[in-house]
Length: 309
Ligand SMILES: *Cc1c(COP(=O)(O)O)cnc(C)c1O
Image 1 (cartoon, rainbow, N blue to C red):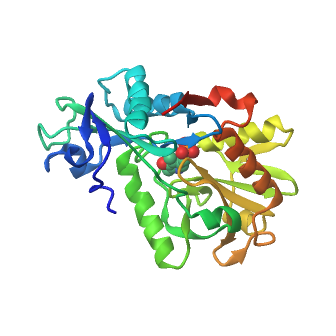
Image 2: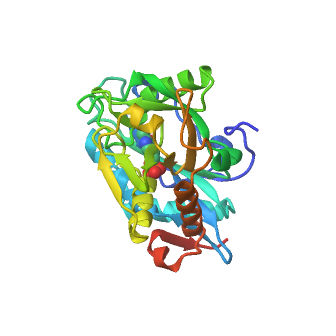
């Protein structure tokens, strides 16, 4: 069923819980026209005894930072946004979910000066499986280097998870899928590897783990989690400039993101990576990640906001 036409559940809009199908905006909503908005993608997972939102506070902090970067003032406190996320999961009876908070400009005017416009916030949550496919978490995906350059660092700002930044992601992903790949790899304006359309990337070579510096990639919370897991287990992670041919000759490669979770990459531009299967280190990090988000690792309890239905 289409996401818009579900006949159950509520969406938090500007402080109110609105029935799913009534959660609408006006056609002249400014952000709908120019993309000046910021959003988050958050996940909640079911565990043995209850459920938990993974790194909710970090996501909310990033939402506010993204807003700060684009010069937007969110008219709610972080606590209000956090409470609303928990409440919407409870009201919609979701033991696991994808949560989408977004802050956007209202339709008072259609110009490019946002200071007189209202800032509106919505939070929706629904049941959503793995973004790049359950099978692909095991077998890995085929990726193509994009003909689109990742947003220049002085164009739209990459530390913001901003709606408008996603036009670049959409072009890249559509091109990749059109060409028979499952996801795109975007290079920065100098030709170094930046990230996927909505995921950060890691490569493994000779037992060491590498990931691009955050110059033109979003500071992913999953990326940060993976770095912590690896380091806590004594593995070395280096943030360096990565070239596409380093990925061709890597032993393993994988994408990370709240939506994509930890997805192995088995091929880039038709070149098999390593054995062409999910690598050993990738599998280990992926399994650890899933244990953490499902509340099975007490050492990482600080990442979880537990709730029960
Ligand atoms: C959201 C996003 C990611 C992944 O970030 P997480 O915090 O791990 O979900 C990576 N790149 C881009 C461009 C994104 O928008």
